[in-house]
Image (tube, rainbow over all chains, first blue to last red; front, top):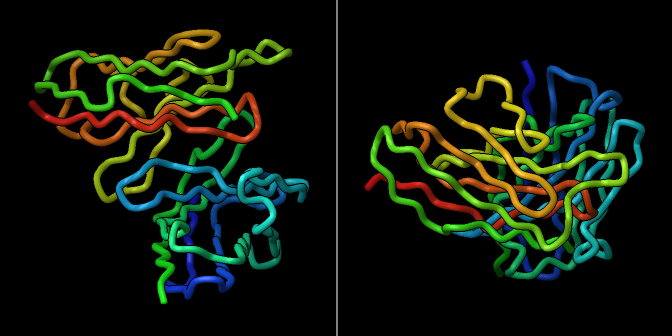
Length: 117
Length: 112
């Protein structure tokens, strides 16, 4: 069955770089895209970035200068890097599958990232 | 960016009651090919969001048929015909017609 699982550090210091990994199973990264979505505590959802089945990428323009998304198809992993972290980047980070007509048809459980010294 | 305005922000309902949530867009979500990329998600407490409705009115896999979506252009509605206890949580609309994807602020459905 389709599964996505996020992993990464729970705590990151301000100004440092965050690296998150989404490991998928039950589908191929060359057939489906994957997005990252974040949710600050008690707040709503914000789309961050996507990598599509062909390998092209898209970023939220508000965060683009700080982001990099890539993939390792041999490991079925999607990688997200965000630099210059600030306290407002504290959030639950989800990865979610993208199909042609349906963004986010499957979601991971999320990984909580706290930015604090 | 496209702004999606959901109303109400909180909805109190009894079991069995029918309720509706509105999602209004700051721009038309109809693209040049005639497609409208409007979706609805439910986030239960402590869980990840799950897809309910895709492309305005299509039921996601395994979603009960008491959920229905409708609308066009800039005005969209999610209806629950007979709320059940498992329906409690926060409902989000989302658009994918215009980059970047944007979400509404959410509507919290709680028991009265």
